[in-house]
Length: 579
Image (tube, rainbow, N blue to C red; front, side, top):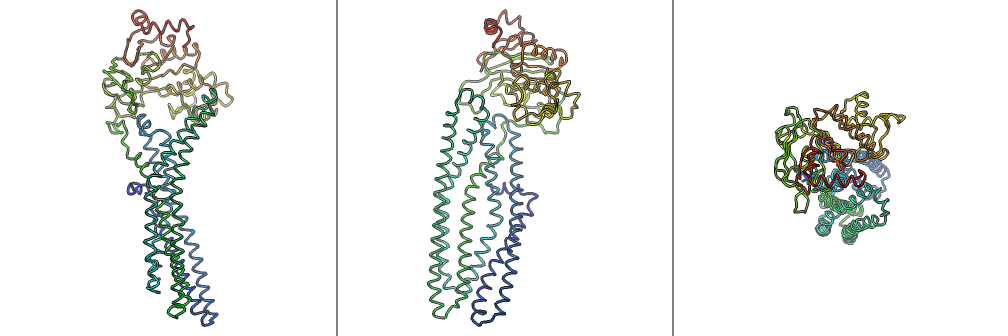
């Protein structure tokens, strides 16, 4: 995992080198100061040599300034290194998620992917910053101080040779019993984010049903779970500081005790004892710094595993062709050959689609009807390979969709999904998703075809009218018409409309349908709808029942022989044509 993550340093490698180098400079300054301080006591003070003390003081001031400068640059370089590493890692994660199929996103969950791209990367980024500074600083202070102390008085050095193993044993024990809690804590953060995301997306439903209290309880449960897990981890880690400080204080006390006797017997100068204590503090503090980094690495390890899980995940849907390899232009002929399908993460034993077969000639206008939950949306999702079939095959122009390059296949398919999505920006930028280089004249022509021009022309800013996140500042019908216009701009060979005119009136829907007949004669149009008035003029109507193909034919043919279609028609006639 560490080796894989280090691959995202790339162009910031020089900062990962410069940061430790400047840290060494900072450490050298810290190590030199106690030596000169001891010289002032043992030589300057003992002999009453004021010029010598002034000289040592000037040298210490210069060393301190150099230490401050190298310290500032080490912080700067470590910040650039860690931030650059975080940038590359987040970018790689986001690009990887873009390759995921719907099934892959369902497997990880949207909330978990958001956490992995933000909170987990931030923790890894923080750990990278600590490593660039502490991983060099702590060993350098430890080793050099250890050598100096042994050289000063090897007998007195025996005290911390006992203290260091004791300190490491305490730290490693605490880390061992805390690692699992960090992994659990990240999962709890996923659950908390999922609760917030679900509530905000469905905020209108929550308020209309006055279920704020219920949502508060759901959030409180997720929040409580995270809090209790965090407290458990924090309590265990909180033992580390008092434990290390006890070892530190006992060691310092032992040094003063034994060192004081040595000073009293004249076997050790008092200034040397003062320097010795300072170096001992460096040694023990370096062990404490290392323990803190180890603690951070424990959590980073859990985050790193989660990040690498995404980076190493093989998408459920793979291209079977190289991206640069071009297929022939798609005409729009569609064939389902004994297709069965169930969602990969579903626990249900039953199939959503069961042995469905039909053929749609290129350029046909085909409608799909059936009760809610019979698999209409699932069926059309198989054509652009948002999901793969469980069994059977889907063919476009006689070629299995699995054998197409995904980019090429989806480039020729326009879709207006059940949940219409507009992006933050303006009307122009949203329409240009269908044709990035389209000029205003082309965009307006498409809005006329989708019957969106009428309301756009009433906006003072026209195409520059702002669109808030999710299109919350336009009505449902306006959003649908903009999405239809966006799909039309793509000039697809296959146009799929998943209940995309449910929020517009019958007259507007008729005009849109007329556009399909007149301007999109060579485009295969698949319309998923509930209203018989929307589908009765289609070339063919597919009737689904309980995931199976019940019948397929024209409106007149189905009215004669298809009982399911007759029941749908009769129910809408009785209800005045309403759904």
